[in-house]
Image 1 (cartoon, one colour):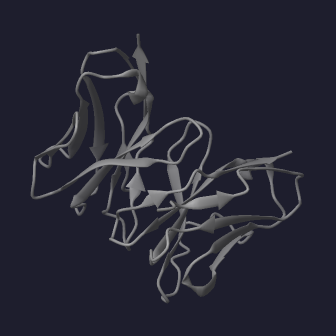
Image 2 (cartoon, chains in turn red, cyan):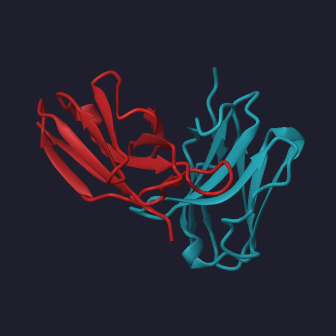
Length: 112
Length: 112
């Protein structure tokens, strides 16, 4: 079936380095993608989104890249900080109805 | 303003008992979603309410699960005859703009 998945379940990164989190999606009908951050004990929090008519979008210290040719989405975090330690989920809107399909998540661990 | 709230934050119940989980969405948000998140896993869609339309129940795993939304605001997710595999974090989200979902902190359900 259609799915959204992640390449790396856990990413360890040194404080101050850049982080890259990858996500593959399979539903070619998806035209809207979101990255969420979930800290321990909390609900997911919106980080950044991108529509399929764009291939790059920047926020504060974060950049999302979309490659529709290979159905790949990535989240780049610049100068990773301890507060960036969390699980990151990508989501797509390709499912029938106004629903998002979430990937399995990648845990980012920031080492001091 | 206030975000999405959920209660209780934690619930421990015995196998076979019924439980009710509550979600208070952001005021004015017309859409409300319920998700289930098992330990270390992604988000599994359960049910979606949009205004006065019939809910999308396509994600409910069995007929032991049901949900209602009264007055277009508060929602209750009910699990009857709970099983150990129902243990998970149940997340509620609301939105006004399509796909921009704001999540609550979740209810951690443990079935013993």
